[in-house]
Length: 312
Image: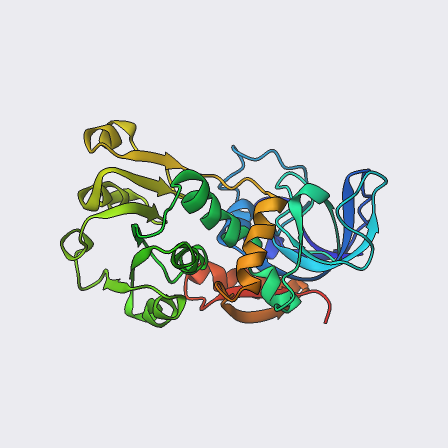
């Protein structure tokens, strides 16, 4: 099969097109014919070697951790899916990724593709959707009527988190730049704070939950707007527990844990029209295409999720 691999850590020139052996599905695996995948910042952070102390990957590595496609084959112990099912997944980090024509993934990490999405749209969902879900639903235990502040709501995770919080009945405030105002408003935010012209600590009335996607001073200053007994959840860096205790706040860091059942719950919300994807530029599964997709992601100027088409 065709795949884009890296043989060592480094720049975009390490992304090379190669024919590799088809993955061999285990008893609990489904073999997925990949129609589309997407690019997330974690892809190029791993490629550059920023996470090599956290992840034990064996070269050559196929990057990519979002996929949508069709089940081609099922392992002997698979009970949830059958050949021909249209599915999407955030596969295990430690296995080969999704910049490839075929993907073997544990059935417990796979869900049926929402019927109202194309493969490209579905491929934009798993990583950002599960990240937002595990932060807001699992960790923060979001409830109807709560006030939620989401930093950088124009990003992939942020725009999904806004929609998820609204679907759960929350009042949502989001920070962002003027360039991201339209996607933040389209995501359903009740209030928009331009961080370049406003200090969110002065503009935001007390909230129950802060979703931190920035870290640093933004994370530290967020305690100023959280109600006692509230929650700070970060996907960037672990909060200082002493600061959380001093402000009577539950604080924590969430690292995504792939989960097919939660992905199926997200799929239901999408089919109900409560959440929709924001798809940006589309590239092809070629050496040049994936390098260009990484370049766009690294620029931080992408509008919507960056998609890589594997099969039309």
